[in-house]
Image 1 (tube, rainbow, N blue to C red):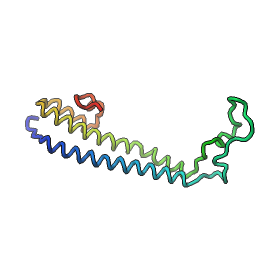
Image 2: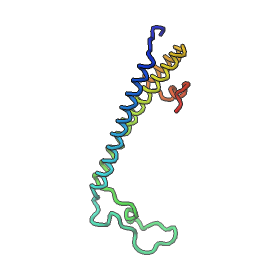
Image 3: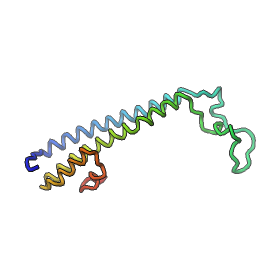
Length: 149
């Protein structure tokens, strides 16, 4: 541990680069989700004609629910098979998107915290921050001084 030779300016430069790249990744993921939402909406439904957006007909008693079988005729549009498939795709990819975010956050927090501890001469805390980043232990990184968001 005493052989560390960290150059804080170099770490700061790398953190700026990683932060910029993380911002670009966030923009790409946001664009992906927006494009898939548009595709799902444009794909239509398996419901014929204008039935996909109909409201129930006739008077309803206050607090009464629509008759069985008419629940899909509320103000919400019916979802078609393409929209459902796109939704399932995004849902199955959610853990991967979350993992990317958590790893990026762990790297940034770990590098910054370890560097700050190194500068203060606390090599044990620096090693703990480095280990927490390697293990993607965000809770440990957030609990360290300067790690809270």
